[in-house]
Image (cartoon, rainbow, N blue to C red; front, side, top):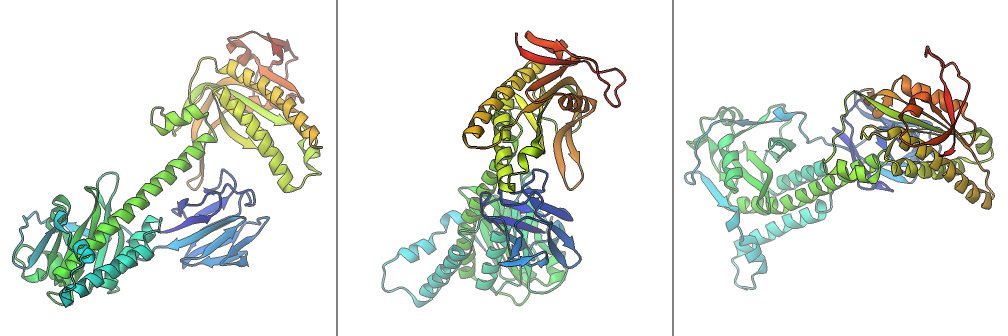
Amino acid sequence: MAHVQIINGIDKGQDFLISTERVIVGRSQKADLTINDVSVSRSHISIEKVENGYLLEDLGSNNGTLINDSLTVSSELHDGDIINIGNTSLKFFIQENSPSDDEDVVISQDNQSLEEGGESIVMDLTEFNSLNEHLESTNKDLDHNIAIKNYRQLQAMLKISNTVANELDLKVLISQLLDIIFSETKATRGFIMLYDENQNLIPMAVKKMAKDDEAITVSSTIINTVVGDKKALLSSDLLNDDRFSSGESIIANQIRSCMCAPLVYHDEVLGVIHIDSDLTTNIFNSDDLELLVAISNQAAACIKNAILLKQLTDEENKRSKLSQYFPPQQVELLMNDKLNISLGGKNESVTILFCDIRSFTSISENLNAIEVMDFLNEFFSAMTDIVFKFDGMVDNFMGDCVLAVFGGPFYHEEHATRAVEAAIAMQEAQNKLNEKFASEGKKTFFVGIGIHSGDVSRGNIGSSQLKKYTVIGSTVNICSRLCSLAKGREIFISEATKLKLSKEFKLEKLKPCKVKNVTEPLVPYKVVSLG
């Protein structure tokens, strides 16, 4: 499975798994991977799974796309490619050693007890301190073999430090760890498995010297001992070890020797490392086991750091996404699971608000793209603050228009009143922005606002590749029609909204108008001022 990691730019550290046939990368909130960089186009590039790999295409972006510093319109992607879009850099990864599915590693259920003896060595991790003792020893009479062992372990630790200690991508880190283990031992097969949120062991990296499709099968007795007792295990001759010699996988694969160690971080077992060999018996010894334990101890810390960073990044991305739609206090409740919103379809009674800039074309015609973007961002920021102030949800930005929802997904009885109060505050904010723009020599603007109350359907809507949490229904359409009737500096509300108001507002009844696909004429009311 391929993925990209943002290595430079405002979203640095974000990792995105390419789990569909085609993904869109751009500044738009509708993109599969949203880049918060103004120099990135709304739909900048696509990455598509093709027969022989992955294909990148520039989607007519304003600032172009570079792959490894070369301008491109369409290019095949390779592992490690650097993609530059605007001021953002992404790194593309393909994990060749990752298993295609869980069947690449099978844990056989032999349910036997395991005691040390015969062809096995079991090492308790809590008693493993020889590495530190040897490295810190000042004894000048060290045995030559011990010195060699210390040097070998130190070299492995340095490889981990130099290669993976600062690697934040979990899949890349685990694959590199397995490569280091293979370089330091005579293993012919191996894997690293981690526990998922349901406490199931999931293969994260698998490596075999032989190019075959045979799954690696490991004894459940070995796994249970290693995980349950937090002990590393070496079996130097599996075919003659009474506890394992009858195992179908051992006979079929002619496995001679194996080692297995838990990945333990502060008493938490994160997973296991397993390596074996079909070359000869006694290919691994106690020094190899000590080395594997030393590697597993340092690897566990690296893996835990990567997991924690991924969690923090995911949490920050989730907070950022929620903050685009919900007020800060509701975001905190959602982050702490104290509020629940259904992502499936649901019908509810709400009040819809449309706020649209009038004659925006004439305003923007003398502005360049960056100036238009700056103008809209300042306008949308001011309007969003007001929506949040009155406990509304920003559903969408459509061109120069804001769509907001009051009363859903967080219900409150006065949703109609809050929507009208928000509209009045928007008109006041428009005046303040115009004063600022005039002082800067910029064009001023005016907004028209429409408000309507009624039932809507809300939830995740879209395709399998792209979904958005939004509201749909005739209530939304009627509100859009009301908004189109309102001129600059005007607020029009429907009779349905008027009947739900819990406060007195000065209203002016207007002539009924016909709305498409609505039987009864719509009776608008113009909000003159607060009562």
